[in-house]
Amino acid sequence: MKNRQQGFTLIEIMIAVAIVGILMAFAIPSYADYVVRGRLSEAFTALGGAQPAAEQYWANNRSYAGFDAAAAFPANTANFSYALTSATASAYTITATGSGKMAGFVYTIDQNGTHATTGSPTGWGTNAACWVDHKGGACSN
Image (cartoon, rainbow, N blue to C red; front, top):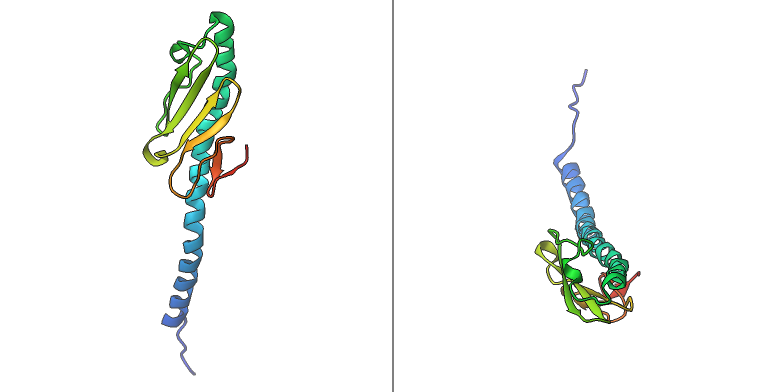
């Protein structure tokens, strides 16, 4: 009777490790971009919600000045800080500036609802007519 050992050879294990390595080389960058796009939605939601709140503030005060002190103004988070970068009786611009892992991203919205990407990390691009949410300057909003 022949005793045969069961198990994997070193070659089989090395091939499996190589296949997993190749798959991870594609999966990790895609996942990182997915996480960044998820964090960007935080800024888009806050800026989009600030616009009707600013209009309500204007209806009550006949000016956008001081809107950044209103309760409806977006609160700073770990990923973005929000500022009323210009405000007059008839115009405003709200800016979301990335911080931490989102550093480099700068998005704005104004009284006309114009979305703009005024700053972004290398590879993402800017756009004066939309909020960039994909590498290469692509916008889906």
